[in-house]
Structure formats: structure tokens, C-alpha cells
Amino acid sequence: MSNRALSRRLVTGSAVVLATLVIPSGLAQAAPSPIKPARTIALEGSPAQGLLSPDGSRLYVPMDRVSADGQQLDGRLTVIDTGTDTVVGSIPVGRMPRFASLTPDGTRAYVPSYMNGDISVVDLASQSVVTTIPTGGTPAYAVINPAGTKVYVPGITTDAVFVIDTATNTVTKAITAGPHPQAIVFSPDGSRAYVTARDANAVQVIDTATESVLATIAVGQRPIRPALNPSGTRLYVPNYEGDSVSVINTGTLQVVQTIKVGKGPIPPVINAKGTRMWVGNESDGTVTEVNLKARAGANPVVRTIKVGKRPSFALLNARGDTLYVTNQGSSSLSGICTATGKVTKKFTTGDGPRQIVGGPALYSIDQTGNRISVFTAARLGSGACS
Image (cartoon, rainbow, N blue to C red; front, side):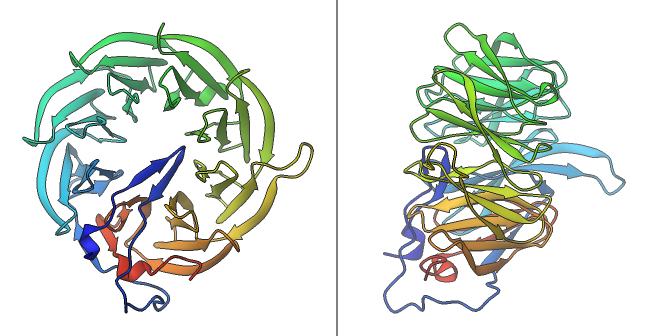
């Protein structure tokens, strides 16, 4: 099997995972530290995130662009062929595109424009925008439900969640939400949507059948994007200014535990078994490892792991033995062996790595470096525990 014919990105529960990378026989398993990317992909503008197509053949990157005199320009959805790691398309979208979503079949992308207050609907086969849907509210997220029938768009400045029907590409409802609705996570069956109301220090639960708020749950200070465990029975809400994670029982819709972590927690990563959670702490350069099966009353924090400056994103590989963490302030990635909690591998990236995408290779989205750093199977070796 060639390095390029590797398994695509997988998603297990709430943990975003990197498909197992098969190392050809005879290839050295260890690499010098720090490990440099096999190659880099230059981008025209600042990338917000990366989205891998279902078959792993394309990487889609929303791009924020500014003119030489500081004027905001129309954004782009950059298309990268993961077989050649080359840019094969640049699709005009709205200004300041943010966190987009792909339909489950990979045929369309819904790209929110933070500045325009609308959603660009992109046909990915023709690489063209088929329609633009006005929403208002400086949207930062466009999140598609598991069935691919609805897109939920939090309107940050309108205190509403806009519902888009993907069959008609029209807004069918605006659900009243708390102040500064920001991030949305759907339950595995799509029957509920969990929305952080940042300025209310709350999570709102939307019944997607009635498209109404079922409950408002008080959490810690400034909640950001939450994560569900694989079974969907617990919602873990990082409280960025509360230095904690609120644990919500999704059956009773009550906070059943508050876990103290480091300063400025980022969205958590949970393993496929639902037994461990890792929370990066942006303000103190650490990752908190949590035992999700700790007995009642016991401290669930297993250890605190030192990484680089301003960790902003984490990704677990398919085997569950390596946690990759972006260090936005150190222009690097940390590879943590999950069995020992030790950082055993370090990777050099461009400036400001914001996100990692796992697929045929490991792709670091270097936001201020305006590039993607590509780490192939040969560079990754067999994981951080090797």
C-alpha cells in the first residue's frame, strides 16, 4: 500500500480521530526532533479551518483575505487535492468565512460569512456557489445535522439560531436563543442541538422536531464549543473564563459535575471508549487528562501535561495512542503518548497552527503562516508511543 492510499479520516463519538497510518515495512519508525513537514501548501490568505471530503480525496479550506491596504476582500474556499497536495480550486465566498460544514454525502459545503451575514452554498463538483442565503447575525458556524437535511446557524449578534432547509436552501425558522449563541453540537440521532449561549453562561437545548428551546442549563463562565461522549449521554462544556468543564447529563438535562482544569480550556477530545478526555488549556500551555470513569467523589484529573504556548486544538489518532495538539503560540505540534502522558514527539509548523485535519496525512492549518503543513506517514512514524 502506498502512503497516499491510506485510510481516510474517521469520527468516533465526539473525538475527531486520524485514520490509522500504515507504515511501509523497512521504514524507520523514529524521526529526529523536532520533525519538519514533508511539504507545505501555500495559501492565498488566512485559513480558518480545514474540512476533509468523505472519501479523503479533497481538503476544503475557508480563506479570509485582506488587501495590501487592509481592506477586507471576498473570501475563498480553497480546494486541495490530497493525492498531490496541490491547490486545484479557489471558490469565491463571502467575506471573513468561518467554520463551514460539508453535507454527509460530500456534495455541498455551507460556508458562513462572518462579515456579510450570510451562508454560501457551494456545489463541490462544479466548484461554484449555487446560492447565497442571508441570515444576519455575524455567523461563525454553519452546522449540518446528521441526516444532512438541516443547517443550524447561530446568529451571534441577533440572539437567534437560523434553520436552513437543505432541500430548498432557505431559512425556515429563527429560533430565539440566549445572548451570543456561538457553537452547536447535534446529538448522534439529530433529535437535539446543544447551543452555547456565551454571554448567558449557559447551554440551550433545542428540540429539533419542534425547533424550539427545550431547556436552558447554567454552566460556567464563557462556555465554548462542547463535546458529547460516544453514547451521547454526557455533554462536556469547556468554560473558557471559568477554567472548568461542566458535565451535563443529557437524560436529565442537569449539570452533574464540574471539573476544574487549567486556564482557558479549549474544546475537549474524548476517546472512542468514552473513558478518557483531554482538555487543552490555552492560557497556561497545558493539557488536562481526565478519567471519565472515576468513582463518585474522586478527583477525575489524572495528570496535567505541559505542551507549547497557546494550545488551540487537539486530535486523537484512530488507535487512540497519540494525541496531537496545536501550539498556536509556538508554531508547533505536540505528540502525546496517551498511555504515559508524555510528549514524545514535536513537529515544526508555520506560524499560528490553529487546527489539525487527519486523513491521508496529518494537515496542520497554519492560520497566520498562510499555509498548510503536511506530515506524511513517514514523518509521523507509528505514533507518539513508539
